[in-house]
Amino acid sequence: MKFCQTCASPVILRVPEGDDKPRHCCSNCDSIFYQNPNNVVGTLPVFEDKVLLCRRAIEPRLGRWTLPAGYMENGESSLNGAIRETREEAGAEIIIESDSLYTLYNLPTINQVYMFFRGELANLDFAPGAESLEVELFTQADIPWKEIAFPVVKTTLELYFEDIKTRHFPVRMFDVHHHKDTGITTNLISHSSLNHSSLNHGFVNGSSKKK
Ligand code: ZN
Image (cartoon, rainbow, N blue to C red):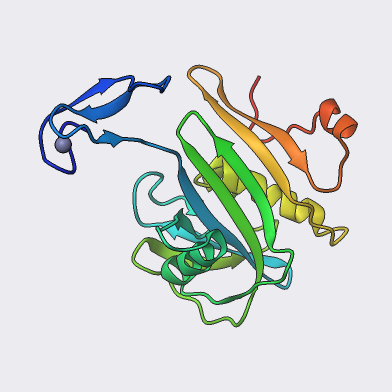
């Protein structure tokens, strides 16, 4: 940012008193502007043995397939944001159970946190919204695995098709790091059904990991 959102004077990047990170500080009215990570919230809508995917009508990854998800708005909860995004992008209504939270990804390299919730489709009335080219149900075998828009979506889909075998859906949290030359690493940080020692042995999701 270049100008103060309060008085429109130029801002400078400096460490404010009592802080340890540079912030945009107004040279005139002393306003300080903090930039914090964005939350991206979405759902994994399922019907029988299929999941609902949207083909992106917008950049980035235009034309690739994704789960309905988007930025959380001020004044809404993460779950309500995910339900809203599902309506907007897929025209779909989902039934949310009490154990709907499924995956959480910290992406410190790009200052985002992703959250996905599981839900059954309430009906088969779905249709692409403005940000989608197509919306379609896929079995595991039919998913266009090579055309998935984001690694966090691919990991969530892979976990789902693994978990569906036992119908047990633990909540997992991952740290995802984007490396300049070697791609993306996805490390499991928290798992609602594993103890700490199991975690240390490390479940590292294979598909989106490059060492
Ligand atoms: Zn100002």
